[in-house]
Amino acid sequence: MTMETRTLGRTDLEVGVIGLGTEHLVDNRENMDAVLDLAVSAGVNYLDLVYNDPTDAHADYWEAIGPAIRRHRERLVLTLHWGFVYHEPLDRCQRCFDQALKRLGNDYAEIAMPGLVDTEPLWKGWTLESIERLGRYQRDGRVGFVGMSNHNPAVARTAVESGLIDVLMFPVNLYQHHGNQERAALLEACAEHQVGVVAMKPYYGGRLLTSEGRPTGITPAQCLHYVLSQPVATAVPGARNAGEMRQALSYLEASVEEKRSTPLDDALVDRLRGQCVLCKHCLPCPQEIPIPSVIYYLDYVEFYGLTPFLQQANREWYASLPAKGSDCIECDVCVERCPFEVDIIGKMRRAVEVFETAA
Ligand code: SF4
Ligand code: SF4
Image (cartoon, rainbow, N blue to C red):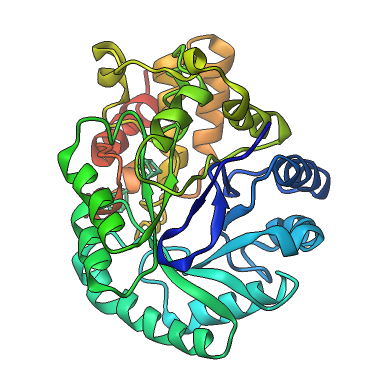
């Protein structure tokens, strides 16, 4: 199998068209080594590192992935995120970023990426201040380029046209991108301004492959072929293990026929609309409701947890949550953050009906 490479915008970095999002990797050493060994041997060199607090919140992840990265460091193009949740204080972002940089083996990240810049105020405030701080890292030779991750095409367009970012990480997939003129125009603007595009969510959080517990019949190779037919440099599927990495790499060996996809059928589009993909971008909730978990247990019961055992198991898991649907004050904060148009407040109300109301 031969990995095609593309130039990542004006960075001039050459990246394999299949990259790796590390968000969902099972964080034990054995798994990290297996995934990275497989990926790197197939020509994957672009890694997105979203977890950036190696001494506290993401310690297990870094204990596992740090050594695996260092074994392959000279072949990798690493993107390290700056900030993990919305409006994270800048001093905390910087502290975590410093600690994570040390775990990369050479105190250097090719790309630093302020994350989740989905609103205009976030761009104008936190992001511009973050970019200013990152300028110092660039001058000190600890960061090569500055990127930004985002799910909102209007805000992304502003950032791209500002000239302040070199790389944009943005969702590109058969469901969200196909036929959407605003998203297509954004990618054209990236090409015009030489901003390298990293395509995240190529499987739409896995929902293009499996929907409501059933395989859709769409393959990873078809999803990736669609994404890589757009003006993007690399796609970053989020494998959990070597098996899922292998599925992504199947794109490299797929025939033209195997890669060809058709527009999604109406029934699947209906099912995909407003579904939670467990990305956690809605957090934190001021009531400390673990929103993705509430939705996960609810969807499980509503869509496919119909056996008494699963009903009961999900009820017990829900009961153990520290805050529940009934704690929701309908402040709307999460709804504004959710890039997938999930009716979160409706889900909270439904969770109360399903889990908290006596039958
Ligand atoms: S609307 Fe409810 S679930 Fe969403 S952030 Fe506000 S309190 Fe939390
Ligand atoms: S509700 Fe939206 S933001 Fe929150 S985890 Fe689900 S898809 Fe992501």
